[in-house]
Amino acid sequence: MCGIAGVIYKQGTSRVGRDMALMLQAMKHRGPDSTGYALYGESTDLLVMRFKLADPHQAGDFSYTERLARSRREVESRLAKIGATVDRVEGESEYAYRATFRYDGELKPLADYVEDVAGVEVLSLGHSLEIVKDLGDAETVSRQYRLDSFGGTHAIGHVRMATESDVDIAGAHPYWAYPFSDVAVVHNGQLTNYHQWRRRLERLGHRFQSECDSEIIAVYLAQRMADGLPLEAAMKQSLEELDGVFTYLVVTEDALGMAKDEMAAKPLVLYEGEDMVAMASEEGSIRAVVDREIDTYDPYEGEVMVWSR
Amino acid sequence: MEPVTDAPVDPATTGGSGRYDVRGLAEPDATAPKTAVISGDSAELDAAELSTRQINLELRRLLSTEGVTDVTLLNPRARHSIAVGLLLRCRLRIEGSLGYFAFGLIDGPEVHLTGRVGWSAAENMMSGVVVVDKNAGSLTGAALRGGDVVVRGHVGARTGIDQKGGTIIVGGNAGSMTGFMMQRGRQIICGDVGPGMGDSMYDGAIYVAGKVASLGVDCVEAEMTPDDDELIDRKFRIYGMERPGSFRKFVCGRKLWNYDSLEPNERKLVL
Image 1 (cartoon, each protein chain N blue to C red):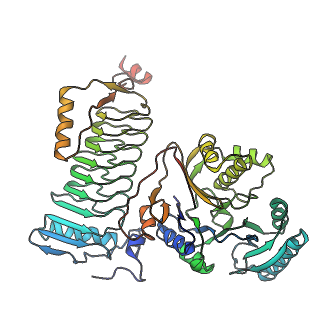
Image 2 (cartoon, rainbow over the protein chains, first blue to last red):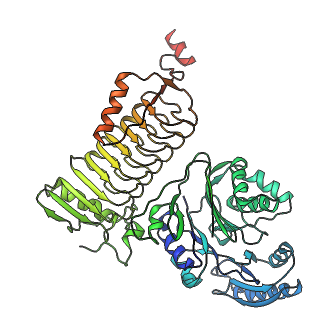
Image 3 (cartoon, chains in turn red, orange):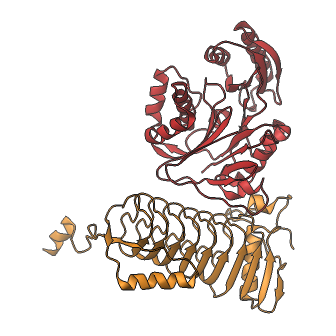
């Protein structure tokens, strides 16, 4: 079933990590398998990369820690080799890290080079986008990655009930639009022309980390934007070109958008307040951050909306 | 109030995710919290700190054993499945918004909700009245059997899907596939309706004052009769709503009615 949520503040930054955790925890019953956050912090001239070295530790894997230490050193040395000046690398767990660095080149060669290290996946890359996803409910993931104090301007999040692919970090949303800077998507639904689009995008040179249909939407939209379409136009075109039932949220460095397919089969409730716009699969999720009676509505079939900060 | 959970949880955000029994039923040991303030035959219940199941148990206690006929529910906090399965005549006023599946399967109550309601409100309602002051989600009045469902704001998609009776009145717009597979009953929609209206409807009527994006399979426009106008007038008078100028009526085209024709193997048997 899955639950999706998004929030964008109209005036400056707020405690977006805390708010998104509250919204997602209120929808735990929609998906207890894994939780993911795409958060936009302060934009700097440094690039920020979230990556994982492996999935959480499995019993019986005796060389896990050693292997991860090796992988981490390898990632750092590869970043240096490709010309990035690493500012810092820090991690809340032994398998997931956040690196900030200075780098002027193309993102794809860098991300490809880093992912070439066995087991490594780049979760997000950009000037302000940070994707954090792991197994467990929203509170568990928020506590593990210390998201409570994360300040930022907008975010999307996802609680997952796995139906089409495995329960692991690669199958968790949000998806970064590899290798496009600062674009991410969460999605509730199923795409029926997934393989068609995957082949099309692969022919353009894109790589896909997961078997999840939602990953297509992120790369599809970012590719359309790279081709010159504004975000809203790219989303409108996606309604024509993606088949299936879906409600998805997309975020870029300065905007948040929602799109609903022509069947309107997947829910979304919208709240447009004075200081924030919040949306979620259920009103209860919005009420977790706006604890008063509010006016909300469901967008209709085929609707596309975009808010900029 | 009796504790129903082992760990402290916020009933508003978890929908009362306390203990589950082996069948997966929520809070099997929950009892009515007895926190409502009763005065005569009316009562006021503050739901802020109660779980969904406690709210419903308390409503049932008030209405069926305390002889209360008029309940006001405060702070529902957009929770799901509130006031379901109430099978008696009563008045229920809910101040605030509700989540999914509100008022499902009710038979008799007169409900007034001052806020908004989520998907599948008044699903399979048998009789009574539900008035929603703001918007409603998709599948409003799904499989409705009788009574009136009035939404003063907009409704989502598939309003009155599989409707088998009763009347759905919408002050605003309605989404796609409104009246899908409707079998009986009426819908009165003041605003615009999305694509595929009345798709595969068997019977019943949909009255629309605004624009219709497109008609579904086998839905056709019919002529308004004085009886139709009188019905609409009466309903608007009852609910104090302003009647838009003119309505168009849509019914089943009966092209898909094949009830009398036999399947090839059945025909063989008959001959």
